Image: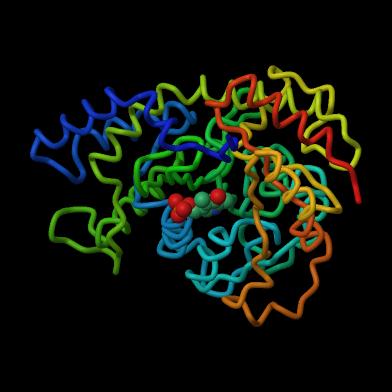
Length: 374
Ligand SMILES: *Cc1c(COP(=O)(O)O)cnc(C)c1O
């Protein structure tokens, strides 16, 4: 039987009765939008992240888009301002920037972490740079102490894209609490996943929080009064209630992800592939990585993927085409970001579901170790 990349059905079945009870509670309440479940989730999630505010929105893309929009409304950004972001990120990070008619400045990532590197970020700063979008790709926190130092030095806003990094931390300070604001996604496959679309912004800035809240609610801060030409982007009561159930289990699930990561790095010894973390890693040392994905690299990635598939291990590629090669950004297609392109040719994500049994982990390890380069 094939080991699935991620079995959402089984993952949610663990909490089936609690999820049903939470959904029924909302159904019976007669109140489905902007109610007590959302309020409670917002307060629980901001406490989890260590921020003053959490604003529920419809999805992770909206969390990023509305934050940038709010900074425009508050006069902190204007059309054409440059935002530094990694060239290898998931396209949603970039969509949030271009939707606001801001200018993404794509920089090559650090080859080891896939995240922004402080030196390359500093090199990309111009007089037009107004913000840094720090994506915590694959679940690993970007180098936030260094990026915040750059932000202080140059007066830049920092928006974290924490869609893959719920709970990742450096010295106990979690994703979502480092930048001036952070966007989270609760897409079903994320580490904290709803049973549908959902997202949130975390921030400790009062003015920013109330502006985002208004923008996501038709631009209204008060019923029937509209400050902005807003949108409708809200987190439904039923999803908030389900997320409250799942938030309680997030730390345990993250710990299991880390155990699997440590098993992979210490026991997959095949030199035909490389690991995202040092071989000496322990669960305790891995504070800054929550393994949304365990991404290995191989020069023979496609052959390795076919081989693992035959061996009963489902893998995925995150991501096959970088944003600058997408048709959506045809004007960038001729540009070369060589490190980013190499990464996209070589990466392969192994299964790392918290539900995997030790036996399944062993199967993945054995299969990887038996792979021989052609
Ligand atoms: C999933 C994801 C998003 C978008 O979140 P949605 O909820 O799917 O809109 C943004 N950035 C990154 C890095 C993501 O992985």
